[in-house]
Image 1 (cartoon, protein in one colour):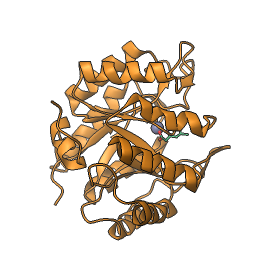
Image 2: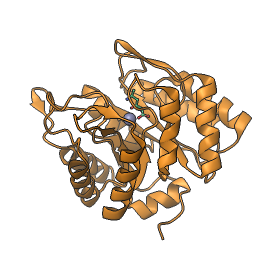
Image 3: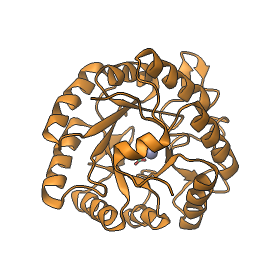
Image 4: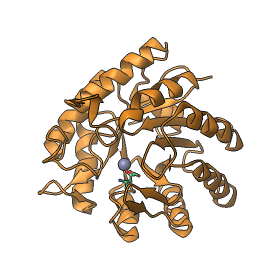
Length: 279
Ligand code: KMH
Ligand code: ZN
């Protein structure tokens, strides 16, 4: 029985340019400020992509380690590093993200067209990511861009076993051009498919761009959790650029409260996802 709502903030991503979206947090200081404010509003997990000194996406291990340490120092948020990176990142660099020892990391369950690009996730790569996370005790969030990715997840778990902590959590990323649409119908189809996954599997959902609100409503009404942030949405409403990640988290919190499923704290989230409590 789902009660509270797990709210993840994905503040930066790898796709938007700082020059076009000035409110995007790209420095460590900007990220920390965003993290603290989003936590105060009700976020429990932060999905992290980082940028280099020129605000370009990077998987630099030193910066990743510094980011994980700084977020742990200044917040209680669950730190989830992206292993998806940017579409141009090589597999070896994406695997090496785990060397930064985050509590959680993303694990995308298949290849998807990504606008004009391809977000490549070969089966062997997915298996390597999953098994390395098992070995290191990093809890995955399985990123699902299309219905078939849930079938791939079932195959992965059948062949290679449950993730660290034993709990399965997926995030439905809806509305990427090339992936599933950000609609209630698509979310319900995924919800049905989740029945083939281990009992207790939880899901969050995020709608890209104008899909944000329909996906929030569909997720809340079907027992799902929420991911919001400027990685996925840079318009608050038609003709109104997002002012900050906090604006998106505050809106998600309002929807969750209206649904009588208030935000989960980071401690409640660790319990839900099978993460060790913070010492
Ligand atoms: N930036 C996308 C190519 C993830 O973070 O794991 C991949 C992505 C998924 O954002
Ligand atoms: Zn991401």
